[in-house]
Image (cartoon, rainbow, N blue to C red; front, side, top):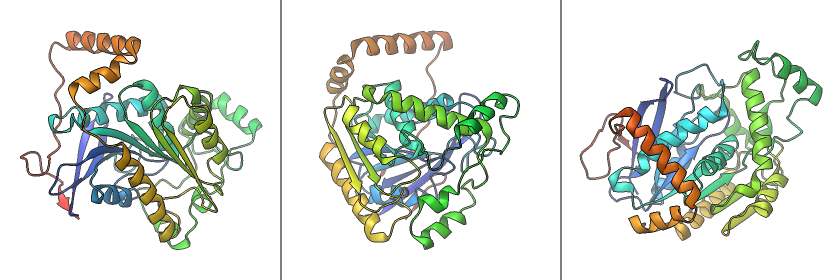
Length: 347
């Protein structure tokens, strides 16, 4: 299937230029929408290109955004001052796509790898009835003890985080060596200049640690359908916590698959046969859950959590009154329809 690729910059609420990209079936309307949440130090247009292409070929509209300071987005390189701000940026952009008229009837899924798995879970917790499911690939529900600094080091770093938040002083093992099994693919990742490969910044490392601890403590709040995939030889994120997610989540529809002998980088670091198997499982899961939604369907789903719905509606109404006018929506071109075409090409 022919695929169209789009890229564009959007401005965050803090005024930062953020890079966004998307892959769409060129000649048909997508059967559903998938939103990419990339991992720490990674980016969407290069590292996650294979994921975008494979899912678009399977008939899905795929959209991604480089977090502030990551990839092609502006900001201090790989500096996460606030994880909640990162989640808010994703929330705003992803929902702007879902609100487009041509996509309102589509199922919408989150796809998170590693730290992006934590981003996906936090997006779900932020608006529990909005998303229709999540693919969680080796999610960062807990950082493995094998790559985490010693507790005494963490205590020391916490005491100086507000003094030197951007300093690259956090000791860590080489995550690329630990994450990607295939030596050829590992070398390709090292050559990607958009991937941050220096030591983690102090504030970034502590934000990731705190977020992973919060997610681990909040697993019972997960209610959406999800498919968690994890290599059982992963030494970067703990596969046992993925198992705990499966066991503790309140979701009625949940699936887990642990892949014998596979490492952390399931989609980009394993031999081709393993990667093919991973994406076959992902597409099969998505195909079973993609559907057309009516306005009534969406309303019924939101009303299943009435308190959340009422609070969210009140917040949106109050925000609109303060602004005095509706928020301007950016437009992504849809196949066969006029729209903004800057940065579009076919693959």
